[in-house]
Image (cartoon, rainbow, N blue to C red):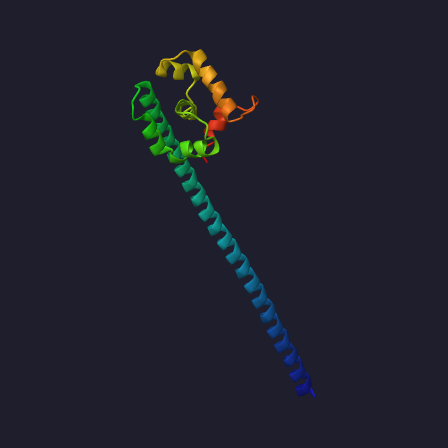
Length: 165
């Protein structure tokens, strides 16, 4: 009888041991899975941070390049360089073609004015560099605004500068 009781107790211990190993193994697997997910999440965050940093650097480079291009174009306007319009189209090929597609009634003078506005040149500067009165530039802007049907509450500069896309 003692042997039977001892066998039963040993069987119970064996079951408990097996169950405890199973439970401990399960906890271990859950813990490892949790740490794996944390590791994976951290590496994904690092990748995203590196990509964002690279995007910011590229955006800075593009913005800087655009400023350099715009400054060189403004210099061409200042010196009345005959290659200005061609150079402008080389750097911004879609701007004038899209403008003409949408507003086919624009004249050469209107297109030039739109490019000056795109470069964020003031009316005073435009008049100074193309040798006309500032009042004339205001009138040209007014006529351009009418041709493109831009309401007076909208800024012509913002409209033109965002037109490239």
